[in-house]
Length: 616
Image (cartoon, rainbow, N blue to C red):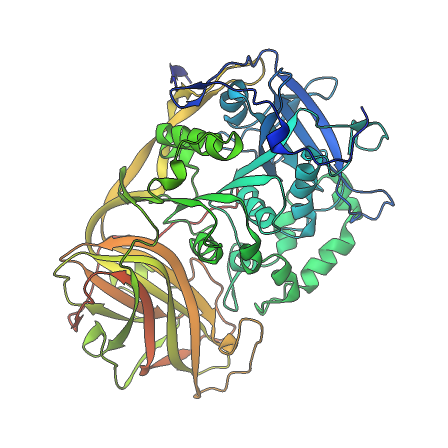
């Protein structure tokens, strides 16, 4: 492959005493309002510390030490830290090119995945890449979103602030200090990495100034389950975690795996194990600013994950949002130049205390059409209110329906088959063609009164935009052979990455929000109840978070079906489901005129239904 490079220019003994960020002498210079590259990567300090996590989950009688690989400017001034804590550094790798860490013959880190080191170290930042306990060179156990992973990052933040002991080796007794650190930390990461940033922020830990969660999980229950029903991707957290364990964890962590398996029953109930991995419930403790990025069509880490965390954050927390049309994609690969510039200013503001005013700028940036972005001062936008829409024989509107509608779950339906009209195992209701644009922005929920012909029943609900549009397709990007460079190259670690371009196509319908549930959890996500065939039950479940403009001339639709086989598992006995229209409604956050109902039939030839992929 011919590689074409395009260079892009942009402006001893630990003292257990907290190191206040205000006590440091800033090792940076401003140019054009942002920190300038004044340090050389050639002489950057590369080192590793093993920090006592306070746990012994692998049961070897020694504290589990977490590994942090560090690269920082060669300066006598103290510097802040950009941290990415991850399980991926020796497995699937990071970024679009799956980069892994590399080390020299003495064990010193050489390759730091992603561009953060190349770009930010010259500008006066340290970059610290943390191996989750149980992965790569750390001890301990992988526990998939639990206390082990929260401790992995929290312990390093404590060490950076002089509150915890670090060592020069994984088992030795020689200590190592972070005298070079201001104590200010910003956590960043995509997927699992960003999920732990959410979790650590929800502890309220001192020293964590900002988090940048990209396509990140806020509740691990909602990655494996949806209101009682299991997703097809992984049924057990241990199946996911086992892919990233090091040899020590594989041999010594059986007790942790048993605990996780016992706490994640196949019936989909929300248990104490899931509660421990639910960062939304502690979001009120977050003090760090939050810059969230998510893809509208991400069916790996679904958009509910950012929506519920965003809504639960204290009003005092500065926050910012990018919402793209992509699936599970890093903004470096769908909006690269704007991303690097914005991230630069964001870290300058919260880690270097540069008063650049970014927190007062537009809170949200939303991709309305491929590569066309719209900014709003607040999110959800001012004027958005929750409206109750109801299905009826007249369509979808504000008037309650009467009678019933029935369909049979065949267990094999997909979004494409349902929306194209070739599968009858669902019911569809729509508004009349809109006379003006209608914005749906926020998290919806649906209440369904329904009876089942069998003791097992699963439900799916979609909000659909019916009308022609041009959208990103697949993951939303295609990787090219050319490269662009972001920062300073260093032997063994260059700053150049393959460019991407947008993939797009025309559709007649788009799923804009979706949700799934097990009827047996009609009372609660935490309790499974027996279903008596023929008896009506009322269940309320959540739909995904969205920000979607339904243009004038399009219709807003509601689809209710059984098993969406592209996402959830089918029930053991496929039912015929009967929906009580008078007892069914959907609560939708809307800005614009409430649409009128239409009984006209809806069909679509091509659809945009979202994309699933492995967590990473």
